[in-house]
Image (cartoon, rainbow, N blue to C red; front, side, top):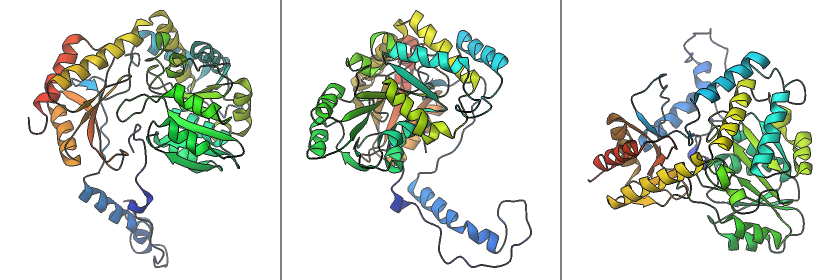
Length: 417
């Protein structure tokens, strides 16, 4: 599944292994992965699943990218253009040289270094929170936060448009989850009515499909009226929104509040790898002691920590990168809309362009690629509303000429235009 898909396919659409697979003696290893007899039957159901995907036009393909590419990239999440910035790559290389290629163990054993502690302190201070905890990915950070804070007796109220990692966190948590309509604080309030016990509302800050922002102040008010906590995934807000890119919660005036927890990824605006949970110190201590994706996972590689820390310091020095990426997104939206395309107004860096059908969306993205432009393609069942779209991501280092050329390519290749 695409890293930004908000939800996995419905379970009913995924063929399950048959229960009447014949038993028998194991055949000799063939080395091909196919096998014969009972070996082949073990995963025979996968062929059915694959055929269903092909018929539905939902086959996904890995495309290894070269070191250098002639494609104009509006598909990656490198919002600030820092993934290959010389200072950031040098910071990553120096960290690997000093601390080693890997963390060598879980954070509680040998995987915590002074580098990790320094990164956590700087992230907490920059984003306006009391404490921070770095994990191996943004996905792991969301699983950690939701499962550790959504235990037995807890009511979890989850936005229908949430990212797959939040959804999976709700599934793994032992509390009761209620899914509410997208960006609807009144629905959050109504779901909390009458609940007696711990409660947690979970939402993206900026939703990855259409790039729209959650009404965070209103959501916080709904939570506070019922003594509930608010957990916000700020993956698409960090580095883009707030003063100097301090994030959506900072922009909303909620950063550092005692009932608010944030998660974020280090792989988007900071151009590195890893995830972070930010919040009150007692919440972070609770995660250290209870969050399974923290306790049992190997710590973030030193190179990733070093790269992220360098990128954060660069953003502090060049806060205009945050406003620049918003300007680029607004320009893309304006030009695409003026050309007659159905484009959603971006609240951060994601620009979503509606497509007539899944098949046309796939062809549209392929035609863009053939014309030298790399864009994302979202289609059912990975979009909650069933509407296929192209997904463009603005970058702070995109020149005005590149932005104009990207729009011309999208318009020129659009179905029916």
